[in-house]
Length: 358
Image (cartoon, rainbow, N blue to C red; front, side, top):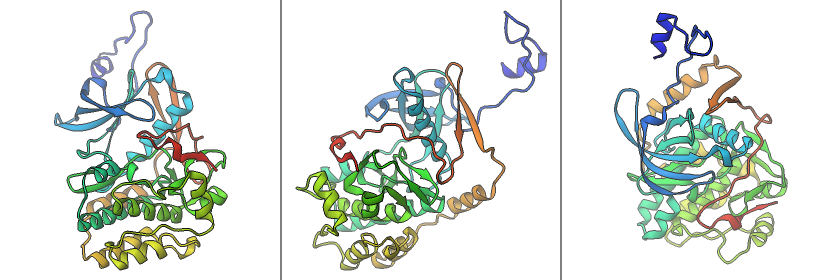
């Protein structure tokens, strides 16, 4: 249709003479609703329903996807910005241990966010269903380390690392849920915002500051979750008690069957009071590989694409996407300290009581 009007110079409107001169092609990550088939409802997300579905790609191939549906009439503009901010970040990720993003369908309602379907679901739920051997738990921790190392290489702070925010399928942990993720190496948050206290580093609890080293602390908490079958951290403590105790230096114990060198790595190099004494995620991954004697898979293709992305400085400072009617959202590429306001975010599966203001 576009090619017809462009070549024939015919008006695209019956009411007025409107000639199409410079069509703007859809980006690879922009999909039409008719290319998405919903097959089964999986549950409720922060902004709407989550469905299993199939996406028809440009080459005609169909892939299984998880589809987040957002009804625009019940969302604020800030919430829509938050969804699109997450989508814009995710489209630059390409790693086996980070959930794959296929794009959005925004031409009509509901807004659809399309992601890789991971067959076993949330990591915490998977761990709670059945006891897993220690070797498998070791590998889960290492895979999560590879994924978070990659995000840090991309100059991104996840800010919400937890077992509930990872997916598991085909024997792979995949980091997911980028609603709080921000670009940069330091992020100062409004201390009145609601945050997941049980996963936070002491400096975040004290000063509302986030760095790559606060992600490392949260990663250590997630490892504790993995080794304890997905139960909630700091069992028996209220959120207020966790807040106070962590700031005073309290740290949890790991199960006796966790390899001693892994215990030391988590306690000393993830949970150190001083962020400067914590390892980077690259060092965490390197030491875990050595301790567990598990070689790193070949991520050469992902690293090459990352370097190509970092070298490409030709993207505009702002990008636009038109959603349904005439609303156009200008999304900043992002830099430390110049970030969109955070929309209200709530957790599913009973974790709302962990999300409190500091």
